[in-house]
Amino acid sequence: MSDLGREAPRPCTVAILDKNLRCHFNEWARFEDPASIIPPEVLSQDWVLAIDGPQGLAEHRGARMRICERKLGAQAKSPYVIRKGQFMANFVSGSIRLFQSLYIAGIFHLFGLPDVGYSQANLIEVYPARIWCELMSSVDTMPKKTTLNGRRQRYRLLIDRSLEFPSFSMKKPPSHDELDAAVAAYSAYLFKHRKTRYIGTQPRYDERSRHFRGGFIVLPAIVPHKYYNTSNSLIRAHSNPETKA
Image (cartoon, rainbow, N blue to C red):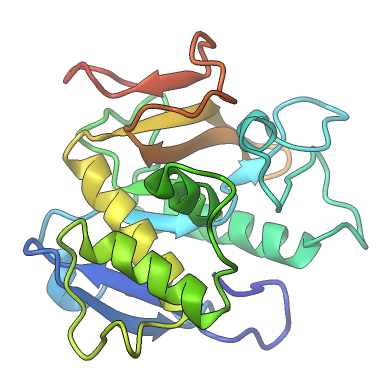
């Protein structure tokens, strides 16, 4: 996701993953109708939208970040109140506003809300930086995503999971923005097939700020690294078909 807080942000990169795991890319501008982020030919299908960006503000007054961000060491942090000059403030506020506008649009059902069951949810938050590390099974060996080697390594991780990328190859892999979008789409695919886990607290809508607070970050359902406290109730897996947030 681009810096949505700027007056003229660059378009967001969108990855669309079909049922055969073929990945295609397009762009979406935030000034368009929120519902238009889902292409017309996809709307009639069973889809899930995964967004790389925070869905809400911190849960507790005075908090500098959400619980899920603290657990994952997220770079962008959502405090209880966004202050001018805060690191990545434009990105955070833009992402939160996007989630709000999608919620208001009526066709998006945010995962974790009390009235949204798992099978109904079609809007989730993801954190590609952590997903890449987990797919890699390491936090130390992933090259920078902006380098050619880093792009090739991330591309290989997706190819190894049966994703197909027409018009791309190891010689000419997708851009780092496209790869982040692709791994977000792959996470949405896993979510739809109940192969994910989630970290954080149940989101709630704050009528006073008119934004969400808290929320879950969705990750692949793989064995967590040793730096996760797997006994913590904030880390849950979708092992039970009846599981609800």
